[in-house]
Amino acid sequence: MMTLYGIKNCDTMKKARAWLDGRGIAYTFHDYKTAGIEKSRLEAWVAQLGLEALLNRAGTTFRKLPDAEKAGLTERKAIALMLAQPSMIKRPVLEKAGKITAGFRPELYEKVLGR
Image 1 (cartoon, rainbow, N blue to C red):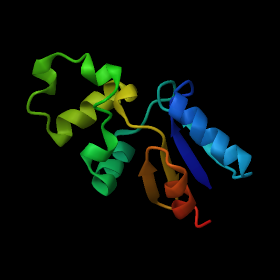
Image 2: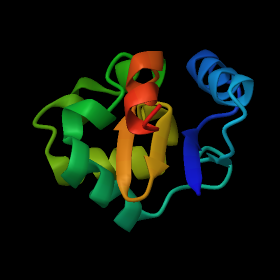
Image 3: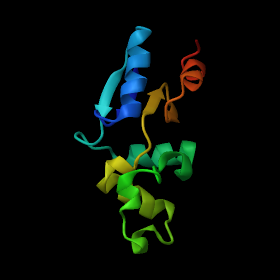
Image 4: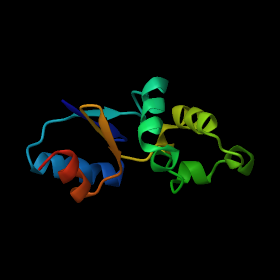
């Protein structure tokens, strides 16, 4: 089974869900804003993708952080911030058979899903 992680009302999430639904691809949706995300899962994602691929620096939540919190951002500190404020996690995150991808691009989904 495949899981799509993100935030329900995010426009990019809506595009990814519509793309999957339009192709009849089954998945479970996990809203990490309401259901949270486990630290171990987030650490595994960072280990597989890298922090820069997962941390949503362009989002309002990150941009509104005080400069002191953004300065000297280590992996450990970034994970703590993403756990406290899941809006800082790039979305969607698609997880299938231990492989993950962050962000939505149809060509990337085609590759991940082997279509």
